Image (tube, rainbow, N blue to C red):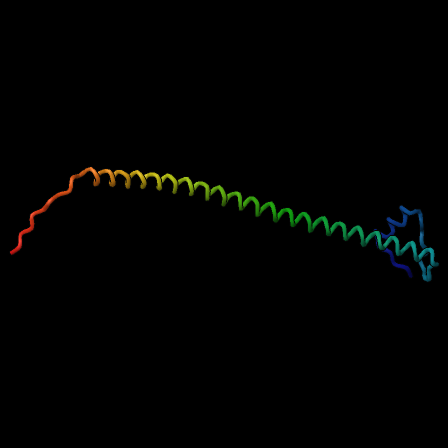
Length: 112
């Protein structure tokens, strides 16, 4: 007895072909059945391919979002460090100016 899936029956109906319920099949019927089964395999393969592509793209999008968030954090940190660096530079310049304007002090040393 010939066992057909619902998908095979649907595709055979689209082709306008009805197969007998018992075996053996003629060569033409076998070719039609192989053609229908190949179409089903190709359809499943295409669906799997689209699913894998979607998963890959979703992964890329999530990685891009994570990288963007990290980039934003790093930019903020760079701004803070630049601000701190500028403050420290001003303090250093003030200290240099303060020490360079003072005259050299002479000290008295007592030797006992």
